[in-house]
Structures are given as structure tokens and as C-alpha cells.
Image (cartoon, rainbow over all chains, first blue to last red; front, side, top):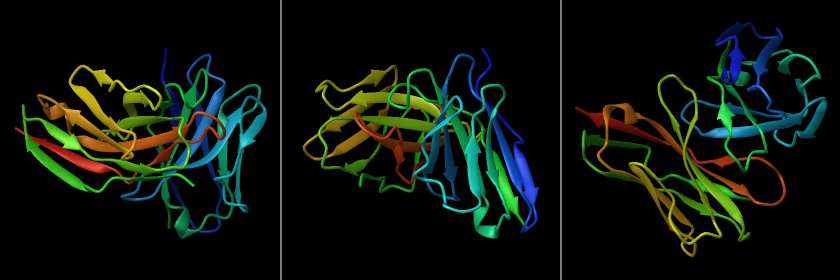
Amino acid sequence: NAGVMQNPRHLVRRRGQEARLRCSPMKGHSHVYWYRQLPEEGLKFMVYLQKENIIDESGMPKERFSAEFPKEGPSILRIQQVVRGDSAAYFCASSLQGAREKLFFGSGTQLSVL
Amino acid sequence: AQTVTQSQPEMSVQEAETVTLSCTYDTSESNYYLFWYKQPPSRQMILVIRQEAYKQQNATENRFSVNFQKAAKSFSLKISDSQLGDTAMYFCAFILIQGAQKLVFGQGTRLTINP
């Protein structure tokens, strides 16, 4: 059973471009979470999704950021018009029964904005 | 709001020694879970140990054990017989039993095991 797959591992964008980060959860997992990690800091919750539904987006910036988890295909975190402050590692996690049980994390996408 | 604090940014010990990482948290709730996650250089977060707040018995997983002091809101991780592969960032995390399904993480402790 493959783990949580995130791609790309590294993504470089210029200011104003769009960034698309992909996450394929573990097989059978319907709960997906996105977290952001700034340098030398812990992970900060962004959004929680189940298939085709956003359950909690309280950690998402109100503008430029969006997330989806379609019926088919990976979960996508989309950042429009990136700025330097968006540079961070973005982690996806999935679980079978929710975050209070075991979360399985991907290896993250390191976004660098030039 | 819940907060998690790890007061040791870095620690370093010799292989085979025992090391304890500190974590304190703040919440007005009484029912929650606590976790320790390991982040090696590969960057992938790996669950080390999980503790239910309603259980008085401290959780253990092989060489890893916790000292959970609910009244003091303290949750330290003890690594016995440390190994080179234990070198990593360690994050303490908290989640309420009811309500939002979001982990709150501490800032992390960078642990280095020296040969």
C-alpha cells in the first residue's frame, strides 16, 4: 500500500504565477488535510477535506488559496498570484477515520517563490 | 485557543544515551489527544506515540515513552537507548476529542544523536 504521495517535491514559481500542489492519499483514505510549515516552525493547519467536500478551511488565507478533493483524482492545493511569503513546505496528510487517529503524511512540497 | 510549546530548540546526545524532550500545552478543555511526531531529513512526518488524555497510564512504544502530567499540562517524550536513526526534528501536537479535526503543533526540537 503506497503512502501519501505528493508532487512535485520542489516547485519554483515567480511572483504572480500560480502554484498547484497535488496529493494522492493512501488507498481507502477519505480524509485529507493540508498543513503549511514555515522555516524553523511547526506545521500549521490549513484545510480539511473529504471527497468532494471542504469540511474545515479555517486555516486557509481568505484570498488566493483554494483546495479541492474531487471524486476522482488527487487533492489539489492551489495558490494564485504567489508572493514571497508563500514560500514554505506544504504537507498533505490522510487518514481512514480522522485526525484523532493516525495521520499519514506525505513528504511535502517545498514551494519557493522568486 | 490551544497552544503547544516546545522550549528546547535543539538537543544533542551520544548514541545509547537516554534523552527527554519537553512539551507543554495550554487548553481549557479536558478531553484531547497528544502526539509526538518525528520529522527526519526526508521531511516526512512520522507518528511516534499517541496519548489519550483520559488515560492515566503513560503510553509506550518500544524505546519511546511519555510522561503525561495532565494537571501540569506537560507531555514529555523519553527516548531510551538512542540510535543514530533517531536524529530528526520532533514535534509535539494536540487535538481536541470533540470539534475541529486539526492538529496544533509545537515549534519542534531538533535532536541530534552523535556516534
